[in-house]
Length: 243
Image (tube, rainbow, N blue to C red):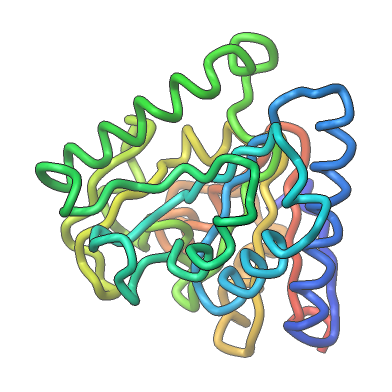
């Protein structure tokens, strides 16, 4: 996977600290002109740690132009233990930015309606910047699954080929099966895409991402993370390559 910047650190805690520090730098720089800043968050063990540390940061708490999104979410009610945004709930009282939540079954007719609503919300919030520079997010944080999946784009799934901005997933191989996910056209409309991977279980997926071979549809189908690329920068931040 060409043109990817690799940051290798010894431990997951150091990965979390580095990601948060770099995000705070982006937020500080891009909000200095009072421009909106859009960051996509992720779930998973490391994603949850990043989210909590980021929203606890005083710079982030006081940034009035910050929008936070989720590139995928489990279609369960707000407050459910499976939600990617669950750990943010206790932090929102003091958070002066904007957190864009995916609607759950308690506020949407079905998962398809939830996906359509999130796509519309994304469109309304980012149209001006998309017209200006063809991007949606300033940074998308992308968690990496052991099978190489990102968001809810799993190996050999139909979501690999979706062209709608946000889609309903009803057959996720990882529970819960029903989810709302961004697609490649949305993820790759980020100024910067940062893939975060920690732990030995991610070793093969990391190796696939870093392979020198030209990216093919077959490679992306096998390891969906190989299809991720930011408009201006793509990063892999990991504790594995350093070992």
